[in-house]
Length: 303
Image 1 (cartoon, rainbow, N blue to C red):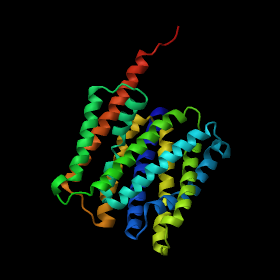
Image 2 (image 1 turned 90 degrees about the vertical axis):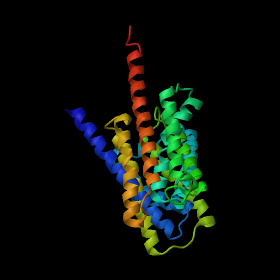
Image 3 (image 1 turned 45 degrees about the vertical axis):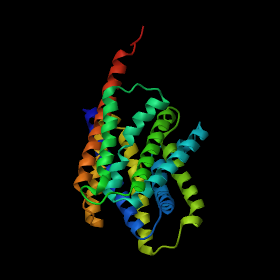
Image 4 (image 1 turned 135 degrees about the vertical axis):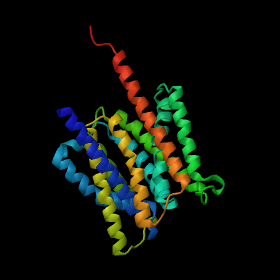
């Protein structure tokens, strides 16, 4: 009974995380309409999100949780994460909200590909087919030739795919780091690194904004911090394979908020591509779960 309650709690936290993700993306998209560029978004998201993360750290593990045994691993993960988030935010500037959010869900496809290339994990024909289908979904969203509406800017799609690739790389790095590093340390040092790099970039890309725009950025930062906390907390209650399907609520949230706040209605191509990409990602998550169970069953149980 307790296990079922923990799983239900994890699912609830994951749904909340999806809501905070959609809210963060929508607020940053609104800020981009006021002339805010990607490096500024990264800085303000980290600046206003860091206090939220710190409150969570002090309330759960204390300051001792921020210590690290692998500072160079944090440096590499933070650098890759910053490149990824800059690409993600630039895609948000260049693309409609729903399309940018949907393309970000090609991450499981790239994670599978990187696992094969870097970790030499076996990728069977089923996951290979899911990978191809996911990329096909991207082509559908791009609307080549303007089918189903005007074609998306290729540059924006490419930047979005690079963001997904970078996020997949971060996922691979986190698999290694979580063996020795506290989750609070991983989250905190990434936010701190993002704030520092954003501050360095601010004189080059930043400009003065009105109070309304700063309020949007502040709200996005708080929502981003809450997203990170609820996502991380969900993993303490339920396995990733159970939680992964609920991440796709982020696409639903992006579509709804894009329509309500930005008056952008997704095209048939966007909806079809989202279904293909979501189906590909869900199948990949299910297949990972099956393979994990098979590995556990095949492992020796002792003398």
